[in-house]
Image (cartoon, rainbow over all chains, first blue to last red; front, side, top):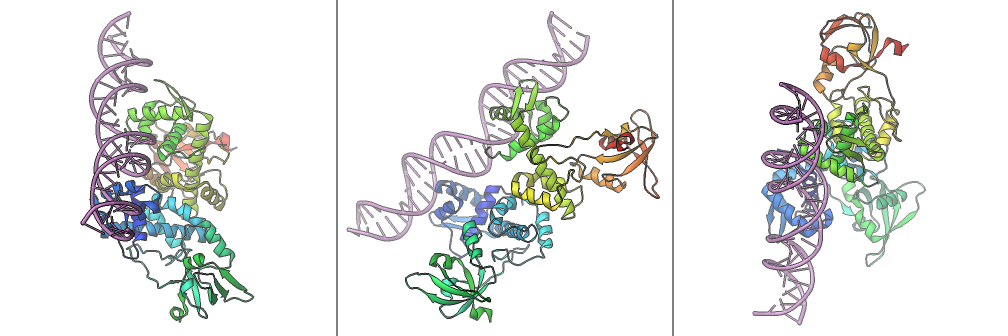
Length: 226
Length: 226
DNA sequence: GTTTAGGTTTAGTTTACCCTAAATTTTTCT
DNA sequence: AGAAAAATTTAGGGTAAACTAAACCTAAAC
């Protein structure tokens, strides 16, 4: 198992994350996510298929092979351990760790990651609530729904949000929301309107959250919590 | 000041270290140190000269410009801060940190390095005794001599050794030598023979150190210590 | 069932960085 | 000084990974 280039690692990681829903990943999705031209993605896909890291059905999409998935999960584990370490040990905010982890994930040795994981107590989730794959590639599955799907009058617990938009993360934190924050949905305006929620905290005031943002906030519902 | 590639960073760092004695650095030295063919070094030197990171006198050698030197010192600072952090905070041995730092030095952000430096208390020296350049590129100068030059009957203090040979580092540690260890030179065999030293520690026994190794151990002499 | 729009692939370039082999310059030796 | 040896550079080539432009599929629309 020879070392993979930084580019290849990025492709595999991205393909894994785009394909989590189970559907094959299209070239254009991949190109979008990696911010490269579709033709470039096409070329790399051919290489990755030759390396048997993925299977490619031309004009349809790609799916990772077992070995491709293992590689992808290794990178994702690194990324999330790094994020956790940076926040827990070095005191960084959750909005700034992604960028650093993006670069370090390719440079850090297996050993450093192991040592950092140990230092933060082998957590199951990163600072944004994303599950950290184990060394042998197991990923905790969670049943989460967008905040918009919790339902008026019900309550939920904010569990996860994507790590890649610092501004959004800062805004979420400024609302007093952190992984684990519980809330009740007071109102949801129709036609993809904003959601009004009340955090389950003393002296919390109702807050209005736009539909798009609310959709990005992945939550456990009351039923799941019970 | 646009970002430099990993290769360029390695060239600059290496040129700086080879040129510390003040002499221009020859293409072949550079090629040797970087483990590439001389022709490759020649080509890169042309590029670096175009970028005004160094000055090149064909068939003679190169010297870093101010901007090249600044860049080199930035990398060296990163490397040494990383080494210090890995030993101090993560408990790594001094023989294994070099390799990790070699890769991380190119990936770590200015900010991460600053934070790590802070975490280890802004030290002036790395675990091998090498001075850590400051953020603004100042380097502590030390007057050190090889252990072979301390002189029989005199004593000295082991202060620095190159960081890049894990086996040698492990052996030095196994002799009970660490940065700061004081010793007396009991004997030095002629014709580059071994040196016999006695560590200034209770119950220390005389130790015989081969000439080549003794030459790699950079020390302060008694005069300097006083 | 064509046509057309959109997504995908192929073809041909470019840049970075390495290589070997050949040519050239410098240094050393007689 | 002239020849041999050593170091350096130039020439030409390879691979990785990006690009643009053109060709090619697929699917939806008329």
